[in-house]
Length: 108
Image 1 (cartoon, rainbow, N blue to C red):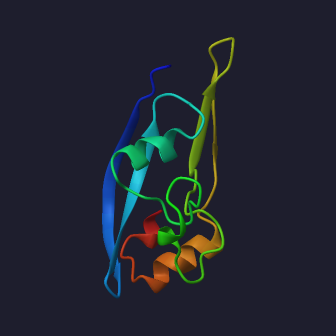
Image 2 (spheres, rainbow, N blue to C red; image 1 turned 90 degrees about the vertical axis):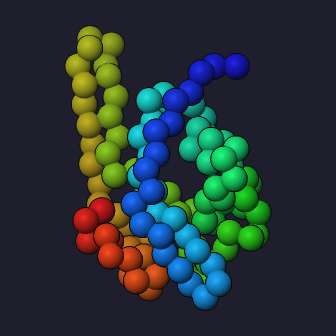
């Protein structure tokens, strides 16, 4: 087994009927396969749309993919140069947050 470090912060709690969702920011300090899925599952936090680790209980009307977005990806190259790429939240995920009355959706 290899070590993996995941830092996370709750940004907002959202409710739809009796269901409560938590929007989180995650910072990975290592890059292991399925790291976010494994760590969140171990904590009992199921990810929306994740049928492998969470099953059908994490389905949400209108969500066709896993609710996961990498806003910034960075990597250190062999010559020690650090590069980053940034992307906006996809419109379908943004629409889900708007429908859940997110107050922070425009800051993501």
